[in-house]
Length: 442
Image 1 (cartoon, helix red, strand yellow):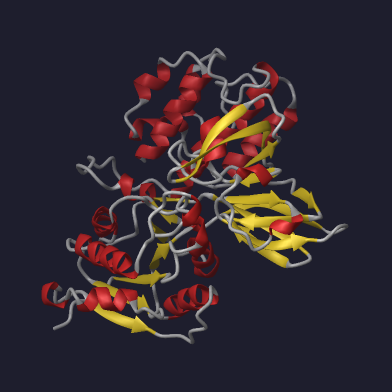
Image 2: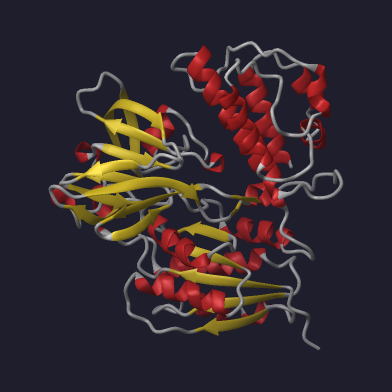
């Protein structure tokens, strides 16, 4: 008797990722079809501990998931079924969108995407609220997971148990939405403003950059986002955005790894926060590159707006790898981490502007502790002296309470085992770090 299907895991691979001309300007390796087949094989092997799975594979023109599965037939488990999902192929990037939609229509609960940032961007656009597991096999690999697919599969197997995926294994990064005469387009990592004549040229040279809009800047990243990663780290989990103004004459110079084996020094004139409520305007003539790919141009007199929005739900395997953590009771709701991080962002941003001048983080700002804070719901937190302005209080209270859960700050921190450390915190910066650690443990 066939095992009950509990989870349907979609698989989609871009056969063309990792093969573009940018690799001629650096030391990046070509990712072959055989490499991608091997990655799918390793993912499936990593899924071994899971039960009640069905693999739904979008059929690309190289049939990458299908070839990986057929080569594993002798080792497959009776309870792991495989189904090919066909759709009209156009041999263009549209196949990624069509393939993802076909997987969703076939009942995929989540989708594993094999490709670069451009591939993951297209998958995310068609995926809706289903979780995305992005595996890197492209030229720009900032958004995707760089772990071996065996480990990704193992973490996913631990997540796909009866019941919902653990909230700590999912996060919602920011996404950039650009609207203009061309319609609307999205980017997961970066939107770069280039000279008008740069359309159609892959971006590997920072000399032509003027402005960069970003949702993340990891210190370990390659690509355009490394400019932020080397200047002011911004984890993707924050869900924030930054605007970086580039100027060759700027006094501040940052060394950026734009690709494997390719290092450039870039002048940074300004880094500022991208306010979700206030779109930024880009004026033509200019070319806009989305996640490293120049896609559209603005003629003289034309303009476009760049906005920060919530991106797709993304699976974080690191949250589930390693020894199992002791249970602290019911799984914390996904909104809990968002509430902690959002309160932190609001408070630190306001305090830094008022008390620390150009310091974003407030590492040296003294923290005054109020004992009553532990018994209050997560709303306005009296640990922070926000001043007499009621608009500041309303801003913070609204940002947290609109998520609508009853937990209080002490309960959140206690669940993470950090009560004593928080009580001993002496600065806003230390309190920030502890809240982020608490959020990562929940």
